[in-house]
Length: 116
Length: 115
Image 1 (cartoon, each protein chain N blue to C red):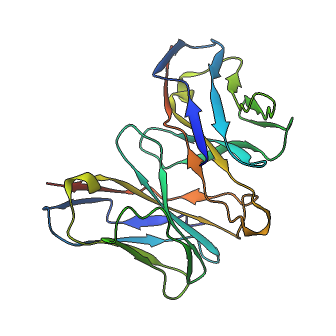
Image 2: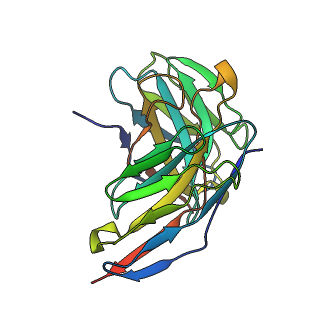
Image 3: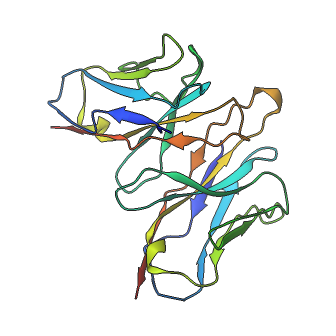
């Protein structure tokens, strides 16, 4: 079945450091790929997405590129801020022709802490 | 506008009790999902509704779990004879239409603790 694997956490960085959180997936066909974020005390919210190979999703300075050849969707940010401290989830949604309805398969999450 | 709301936010149940968790999706959203999130893990799919029709219940872990959305808006997830392994956060999400092109909006979750 479909699965998502994220790098082990937690990740601790200083402000303005470069961030990479690795994500790889296993799925049949060509899934849509997502990064969700959960800030402390808040619900899950969509950060960015990509729906086909070589697409780049971007939002709030974060980027991720859909790499079909390596089945990866790594999250990057050039300069993190304290306010980026949160839990980040990589997810996929299978696109199985007309029957797809958007069910998400999530990775286990990566806790990011950014210090001033 | 109002987002997805869930109630109660916290629920403590003794083993063997029945519980009912409520989800109020965003008005007009066709799709509604339930996910279960164990501590330190990512959410796992439980079930999916398109309007009032339950089209996929493949993620429900046992026949003690039951979900309904009778009028195509509010949904209830019911767990009968709760067990300790049912302790988790239960998340509800809704989206405007069916399909991965439509963003899922998540509620704050209900944290269930079974003692």
